Amino acid sequence: KVWESFKPKLGRVDLSTKSQLHPQACFKVAVLGAAGGIGQPLSLLIKMSPLVSALHLYDIANVKGVAADLSHCNTPAQVLGFTGESELANSLKGVDLVVIPAGIPRKPGMTGDDLFNVNASIVKSLVEAVADNAPDAFIHIISNPVNSTVPIAAEVLKQKGVYDPKKLFGVTTLDVVRANTFVAQKKNLRLMDVDVPVIGGHSGITILPLLSRTQPLVLINNKETEELTARIQNAGTEVVEAKAGAGSATLSMAYAAARFVESSLRALDGDGDVYECAYVQSDLTEIPFFASRVKIGRKGVQALMASDVLEMSDYESEKLAALKPELMASIEKGVAFVHEQT
Ligand code: NAI
Image (cartoon, rainbow, N blue to C red; front, side):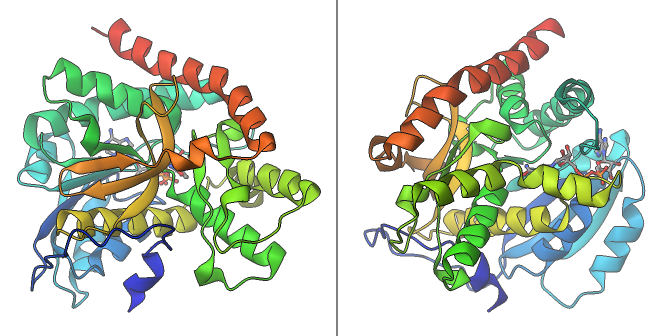
């Protein structure tokens, strides 16, 4: 039952593919950065999934205790802890899905560059290990700045000769979760019914909630649209400031990432009805990586949902034009980072 709440509400339902659900949990998941603020609650939520048979927790420190603790929960996944670089390869062997929340979170006053410099190196080295040890796995990148860390991961995978653009995802689910929550509050709707597609990228003005395409159909006037858009774009800062130096969003992020993991596992399991927003390689616009609703299947991204981009309001079209230069610059920065290192 608890997983029902992770299931996104769907605009279009594809009934052509019958689900072939396995009778038992059968997927192996690795969390890299599992001892962190996001990693711990995310690992707990993944441990609750009925689809997971093995949960591998990797971190540079303090992960054995987290693994021992979670291993006592009476759900199917067998939990194993892996500490330090010497155990990284083993944590990835035979894994179907890798989630990466490793890295430093944003603190008040921190610039985007401060975050980039540390997290770019962490993501690069972890994705190298994924390429060597789990080249067919779905990869979910949480480490910020996602707008750059996903292109970094793509370049690393290309260099290793194992890049499959359909299996690399930047996790933007938190933007959708926030948009759904804020819209439901503002319009007094039942939370579980609301679904707002969020496209573009995953920071500041690159986050573009398509409020005109909210389901169920609801009238959101211009003033409300501006207020809600600004709140969704700045929601991360709301949490960073409230935590006053103790980090960024961890619990809501873990919730959102667990939903995306569960959706991906359902897709791997043959459910033909899985749609989520994610930041992926894309040809919906001229920007090579772009968040949109995607249909996920056994082999990863099966289709990009073009209708959102084609049928947006004038306000959203303007915002889309405005975000493109910033998103493109972040992508180029990520690509350049990998090429400078080689
Ligand atoms: P945290 O500092 O609490 O945890 C990070 C963990 O990563 C620590 O346990 C640390 O030991 C580990 N780590 C560092 N280097 C590592 C390496 N080379 N290999 C494996 N593990 C390593 O940080 P928190 O709050 O969990 O945030 C993690 C990341 O997630 C940050 O980059 C943050 O900006 C990002 N984030 C992303 C969001 C999204 O919507 N995609 C939302 C919120 C945060």
